[in-house]
Image 1 (cartoon, rainbow, N blue to C red):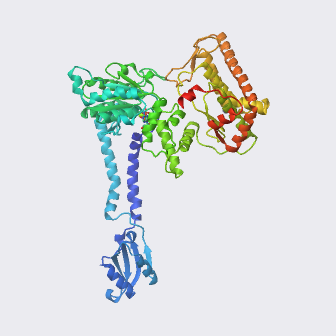
Image 2 (cartoon, protein in one colour):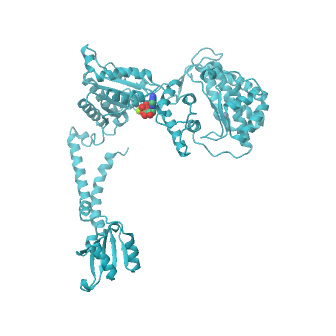
Image 3 (cartoon, rainbow, N blue to C red):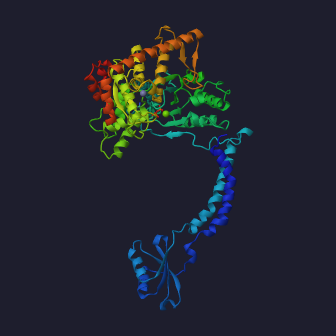
Length: 628
Ligand code: ADP
Ligand code: MG
Ligand code: ZN
């Protein structure tokens, strides 16, 4: 069972009672109070100084951070007996201490008092008040939900139910790289701003828009931008917050949310992670979830309940539209779908431009180059990247972000933290050959992505890394390109084999081999790129409840299975053979590059190409030329 705030609150009440008595019994007497040991007489600071000069002061006790002193004085004016007198000291009298010490008067300082009379009272009342307050809340809650025995303990209203932002302050200009989505939403903004022109011609304003896309692509940002552009309030709640252990809570939250929204219309209601409640009903491992279904039903009821023209537009976000209950997608509910995908090259450039605006960038920064190095990065990743770079810049005490910091952040985001550098040893030499093996194959194959750099600086799990500049169009990849990638991935192991011999190869290539196998297998079973022919034999699983790609469904005979294995083996063997010959043919330049790498730790792609071109012809890489 999961422990929630409610359980904690429930159990804390008896504890509070005990705590109250403890407080009364043990704590109060231990506190000291200035008022208890002060005589009622007072004197001025000036008088005090006079007494001091006369030698009548015997002892000084400071309180209140040195603002108040209780002095013990003995003098003829005081009837020749010791009296305690209170003196208010000026805030700044450091010379007083020196003076007191010179006169050899006993001084003592007491820590600031914790509770004076008033504080004492508050302190004594604190726990009873808390106790009574707690009871009151408890009764109010159960009074509200007096709808049946099961609901008496439901705390549906005890938490903040949803967030409300009167003004999001986000404009369409803050969202970049998702132009189609923005265009769709321009219309929604118009609905919110001037609903009359639509109702006049009998048009129904859409109630719900579903934003579909992977995490970090700007779905929340877009929803906020709509509210910002239309200048309406923004209500938001996350689907996972609906799913509660108490029955009926989710549904009552939905009710409350829409009630508040109606009071504030026109407005935007944003439901993040709607898949948490909006899954296909009656499915899933372990049967349905009544609470979730109730919440979903309530949501559907609410959406049906308001007329299209009340000015509430519900925007929901998910990254799994395929698992949503079909009732959610019906007309009148989330009938519009807007897809926001991971940005392409131009999208990334535009997003970088947005986030570079408020950062100090050196003139050497090329956002285009950054965009080219970051395929697959979402908007959030890119924002994070520039922020990381800014942090590194600040740590180096530089005054503008340069390419070096951006590169370092990309490396870190993609490959992990920098590890401790390797000491010179045979294994470092082997790693150097392995990496140069990848790099030379990548450089010499026309269809391989160009090398960005080779490095022996360990990162994450990797002890050396070869970085490639990926071709941006990752959606259509030709057979030769896949073959080139397989060869590039085999380059490391091949170099180990040729230089150190078959028996000396290491486990360092295991990751490469995994990729090689997976690429070769997909060529055969998914892309129809083998002698078996254009057949799709396996497809990536789309079972939403077992996670992505966890199992693959296969529908073929054992005979085909044997053929598949043979084809996969054949492809890899052919690639391996070619790679071995590339390494053998270029052994001289490889040796030279390895020495250089061991000395410098990192070689960038340009330098690498220049050196290799001194020995052999490097084919022109079309994509590379076009993009530069
Ligand atoms: P999602 O809701 O899709 O997971 P968010 O909207 O929460 O993503 O994005 C997180 C952050 O990433 C945003 O606050 C913004 O700084 C940045 N971001 C994401 N996408 C974009 C984009 N298209 N344009 C500008 N910034 C973006
Ligand atoms: Mg979000
Ligand atoms: Zn490798």
